[in-house]
Amino acid sequence: MQPIQTVLIYGYGVMGRGVAKTFADAGFTTIVKSSRAGKLTGLPARATAVERLPKEPPDLVIEFVPEDARVKQAAYAEIESAYPSSDKAPLIASGTSGLDLVELARNMKHPERFLGVHYFMPADTAPVVEVMAGLATSRADVDRVAEALRRTGKEPVVLYKPIVGFLVNRLQHAILHEAYYLIEAGVASAEQIDHAARRMLAPRMCLNGLIQQKDVSGLKIHADAQESIVPRLFHNGVPNPMLQTMVALGRTGLSAGKGFYDWSGCDVEAVRRQASSQLAKLLEFLKTGIGAPAPGTQPKPVSK
Picture 1 (tube, rainbow, N blue to C red):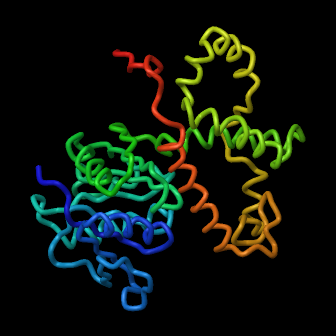
Picture 2 (cartoon, rainbow, N blue to C red; picture 1 turned 90 degrees about the vertical axis):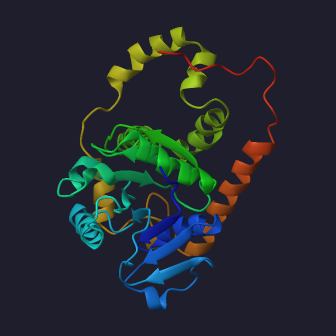
């Protein structure tokens, strides 16, 4: 099976720009499909922009259109119609972060060539990308896309079974759902929750992850704590109404000037540039600053 060489980015918003840069910088033939192709600025040096799909099929199309199933399905229909030959049809990846891949592929002619590729903001800096199979995608094609991402410098988390939200967002939303409940119930403020995350959860996870930390701490005390805590967690199975109301009122965060925090008077792009720069510095430190693990400190995977 030939490695992926040509990548088409369908949609050129904030995420599409970052992803296009990673492929172009890594030497891939990179094409950006956008209705604004003739007006785009800041296009990566080795990327080209087109308004219509090129005649020659790319190896991989990654879609970054709005998080609306119908809009995404229309894009897939356009791509499949442009490349009807099954032996030359590209792999099509959705850049969704939370929609159901099975539902998105429902009307596709070749669902076996469909998968999910979930980048994190900022796409050009964040090291991890999730690659997830659709319902009919072969492991070989999932691995092929994961290998292409490794060639761009990313660290793929590979999932061979589709599940809504991928892996990272499911973990993140489980934590956030409880955090929003604690704010609503008056137990803790957004500032207190963020302080605890920055100073305790995040540093420990940087070193030992989530599961390994429990091995280090001891599973007996962890199991006992689960018996006490898990039944008392906020398991209501619906999106948090406080958050939904905030969004409905236009309190959508940094870009709107107000969310859980008051961002009025802040330079939006400066805040985002600082976040990207700080993340890059932290990742570099974690890679080189901590030093090599001491002999005899690294676990082996447990065979099933």
